[in-house]
Length: 326
Image (cartoon, rainbow, N blue to C red; front, side, top):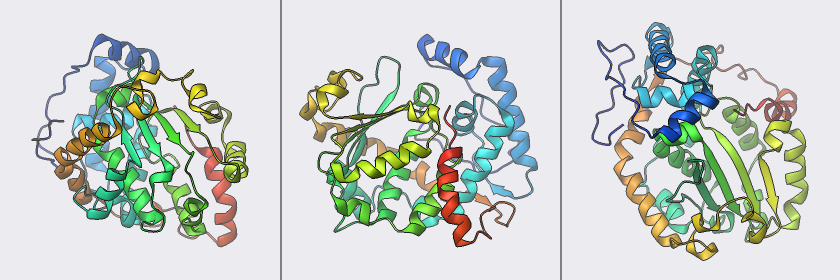
């Protein structure tokens, strides 16, 4: 979607903007091979998806443009039932947890400061498979100044700013995290309630094709935590998590030229951040317009509303186990 386009939140507009697949053959092949996507499949799926939204008794306002709906269709490999369920949950968690998912504004001084710090940003070049590489330095998140709520908001803002990129919808994402300066304060900012609610949110609610997660130089105090997280993940997801003892080990998996210059690449970190901030500013209005989407909330749309503390405690592990990976 062009950044000059006005976001239409009418859930049943009189007409829809035509869609044309404008990506290179490289992405067309991946879409066909991995997602079952072709022109007919895409056109029929968009038509069914839009009809479902128009008739949904609880959805009041929602984007129905192709780039937005294709986030869900591509994540779910064009399964209409799975994509519609994910959209319903996505709209629900945004309203249930507005402190995490609303006002994702790059002009917010705190969010801008976190971006400026180099905590999280995408790298300019995609890898040979067309995947977007997200780079994070955990040690640059100032736990004395910022909260877990702001951390989640930054991740949400970054996700929303990037998710209309069709290349990423098709090829997916790689995450690389520098944990060499991770401090124990990073773990202490999380409350049990945060973990409980976040587990509900990430379970089949966010449209994003996660292909690989790389953690470099994880300190020893985090080993037990990482072992626990890995133990409750599905085998498919575990196979996409890589813990590296050093950067040389990472570079056997990822082309080092794609990394920031400070890590052996070609583009300095400051330039990577500046390029991304420009994109965040350009997409600011589109991201903020998402706050106007609306779904009526009731107990059927929040199945965990009546959970007891013991249900929630066991549910955290269950949520990890049920995480879906494409």
